[in-house]
Amino acid sequence: MKEYHKIETLFKRSPDTKKLVEGVFANKAVEYLKDNIWQFTEKVDGTNIRVYWDGHSASFAGRTDKAQIPEPLLNKLNDLFGGEANAQLFEQKFGDKEVILFGEGFGPKIQKGGGLYRKEVDFILFDVLIGEKY
Image (tube, rainbow, N blue to C red):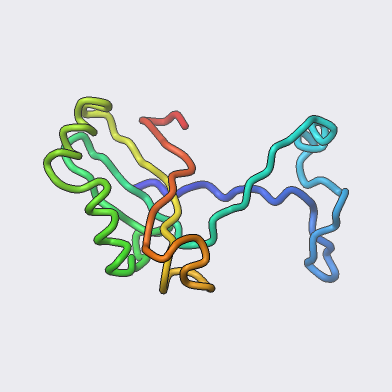
């Protein structure tokens, strides 16, 4: 299953300290857009999760194929995406196309602060790959 690409850092890092140098952009396209009006939201701190639809059933993986998914999160993913009813929804929407839902699993015992966002384990979607298109 395809892994999610690395998201570039906004600013360059100092070669000496490895800290971000605010105002020195790592990407010319982002620098070009710097004066536009932006809306920012917090990045959810948790564990990277992939939900893979192979055209017949859904399966789950972490950021890499070797990553271990905590049992409470795996149970939540099965509730959200597993079972016959969800398989029918995937099939109706995507047919036999390969689809990967990229998201973040979070909640108690998954990230520092445990119940920072809510008291139970959950999943938030941040990107979708259908075939070769995001």
